[in-house]
Every structure is written in structure tokens, then in C-alpha cells.
Amino acid sequence: NWTTGNVIEEQVAAIREQVGDRRAICGLSGGVDSAVAAALVQKAIGSQLTCVYVDHGLMRKGETEQVEKDFVAATGVQLKVVDAEERFLKALAGVSDPEEKRKIIGREFIRVFERAQAEIIADQGPAVEFLVQGTLYPDVVESGGGTGTANIKSHHNVGGLPEDLEFKLIEPLRQLFKDEVRMVGQELGLPDEIVQRQPFPGPGLGIRIVGSVSKERLDLLREADAIAREELTAAGLDRDIWQCPVVLLADVRSVGVQGDGRTYGHPIVLRPVSSEDAMTADWSRLPYDVLARISTRITNEVKDVNRVVLDVTSKPPGTIEWE
Ligand code: XMP
Image (tube, rainbow, N blue to C red; front, side, top):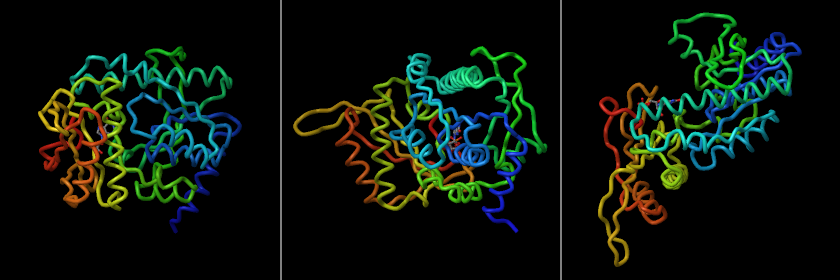
């Protein structure tokens, strides 16, 4: 008889048994799965868990604060936030190729995370043996099954971890689907802003700037994205759409007019999609008045943006993200 209460009780007992008086760490991405997994493990072992959140400077407006404040307030978890913005921006400077950007972001992320792991181990002693992951049932099926506790070899490009350092995995969501994970999160007292979050890619806004990534461009895109999200939420459309990437065409300019003057600015693309599983998607038929409000506000409020365009491509042939 499946209830969220049962799942939580069973998992809490199992995690306590597994971990004993040793310690665990968990990487938080800001997404639903890692947040719920962390909250569950926190409930089981409290201060024996430390979470690590890497702020790569590619997050949306308010996201890092949400993890720092709301998540900690709701769970009381010990959190280590690593500010790695400068490092990521330096590594990304001048790079426009989408695959190259993705590789750089992935590599830097692992380096920063490993360094944080090493610091926690140095602080807390050798009994940090467990790594919490928000693996869901569909992830398990997709990767060909497998049961029980796996041992993974930690990547060790940089960061001073011993080469043979191994973590035992804690994966309390292995038997759950996404909607069940959301219910567990709710039951654990996580705020809606975390539990009901729409998907957001790990590389963040870095792959929503067509062209190279810079602090200035990120700030501009963050503003436009915040406006779109605000208006979609105000219109009550968050549950109707799967997600709505907002993309800055940083290498494109077009002519416009504002007041008495000519402008020569960048376009912003709205990419609202409806989907069941992100494998296929259709463009969302958003109400014109909502689109109009988003467009007016973005062109009025965001410096250097003088045009808003709507992406009306389904997936396939378009992907959801532009890069
Ligand atoms: P695409 O663009 O492939 O996106 O149609 C499908 C879904 O996956 C998300 N996405 C990512 N999520 N890391 C992630 O965690 C990534 O590198 C990544 N790339 C795309 C995307 O937002 C959409 O929900």
C-alpha cells in the first residue's frame, strides 16, 4: 500500500541502518531530484550530511538564494556553497561553440565539486563514505537496471582526492517516478518553488546565449528570463507548460526605434514547450495577451534588447534548448 509516508519511513530507516555513525555528502543542483534526495537523507541522519552547491554563475535570478535560504530553512541541512562564477566565466570566455561550452561547464563543475568534497573530508575526517544521488526509477531502467549499493570511483582530475577514493551511493529515490518524488518532497515540507520546479539544464544559461558567454550577457538574459517567468506565473501557466527557455541571440542585432531614436539591439527568443517527457515536445500555444506583456516588458526593461520573437518549432526537428 503505497503512501508517501510509508516511503519516507522506510527510506529513513534504511539510510540510518546503512550510514550508522558515518557521514555523507550530496551535490545539490537546484533541481527537484537532488533536493528531495537530500531532504530525505537529512531527515534520516541530520548533521551527518553535508550538501554542496556549486554556483557557476549561470543560474537564473534568485536560484542560488533559493537553495541557500529556502532549502536550508525547510530542511536545516548543512550546506557548503561554492562561488565559482569567476572560474566558469574565465573558462568560457570567447567560446561560442555549443558542444565546447557544454564540455567546459561539465569539466569545471567536476573540478569544483571534487575540491569541495576534499575540503569536507579534510574537515570532518575519513568517515565521509557516502554520496547521495537523486537517481529516479526511469534513470535506473534507462541505464539497464542493477540493484543494491554500487561503488563508484570518484573522478579525480584535480582537487587532491586520493585516486582510489570510493563512495558508497545512497539513492533513496531509485524506485520512484517524478510525480512521486514531488509528493515525497511536499510531505518533507519543501516549498513549492523547489518541488514544482520546471526542468532547467545543468549548464544553465550558458547554453541559452547563442554566442560567447560573458557576465554582461548573462545579466541581460537573467533579466529577460525573470520577466518571462514572472508573467507566466502570474498568468497561472506554470503547470500548463513543460518549461520555457528564454534565449539571447547575442551575435545577432536588428534595427529598432525607441522614442525618437534608432536602436540596434539583440533579439530574445521565447521557447515555451509542452511535453510529457522532453523526448518530444510541441510549442505551447500561449495566450496572446501573455506574450504581449512579456514582450513589452522585456523590450522596455532590458537594456540592449529591442525585439522578442517566439519559437514555433516542435521537437523534432528542433530540440527544446537552442544549444
Ligand atoms: P533538449 O534540448 O535536448 O532538452 O530537447 C531536453 C530536456 O533536457 C534538458 N537539458 C538538460 N538537462 N543537463 C540537464 O540536466 C543538460 O546538459 C541538458 N540539456 C538539456 C532541457 O532543459 C529539456 O528539459
